[in-house]
Length: 233
Image (cartoon, rainbow, N blue to C red; front, top):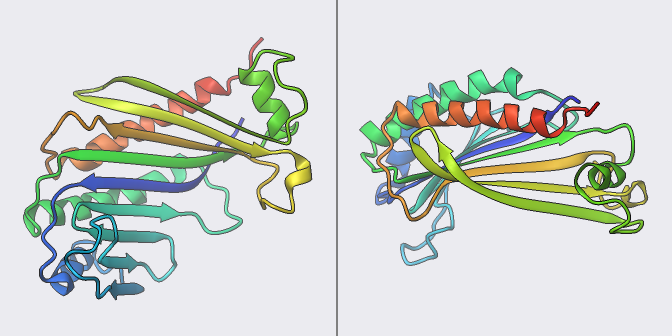
């Protein structure tokens, strides 16, 4: 079964000095060779505002790549254009190249310590039967739930991925065909795979480790999802 990418998000958790927000935005745009030449927004948010709120919002002209910077995190993400169905292997090289550029700027220009990373891959599969029926047959015991209109399934694992201890969440969401008016992708089984280094461990990711870890996660996610949806004999 083919798996299509909807969004990729990488979060770098760190204390980021934003006293000169214009300079931070310029440094990131320069590091990515003017990738963020579309949207550049410096929000007039006071320093005592909640740290989760982005102070800088950057985007490319095609509205695919985005970067949000707040005092505690940098978020870099790719969102597929509406109607496009691409696999992870088709988009990951370009994404990792840009992430490597951002990582160098974060470490050399912003001079911050990246203590944790989170990577979220949102994808979709299109089973021949309704997504609700498919999910029930794949993961639930027959007869335990009768004719649900909507179904969500989440599960968490903790393990080591290379040298890093991580959490891995799988979140599955789907609606029955009758829900088409409330969800455009009602015929899709929507999947969110969230892999993040555990909060109790503080690392110091180098500029090289940031894209390398992301690449490692991509390889794992692709293999993991394929194993979940392999047809049984």
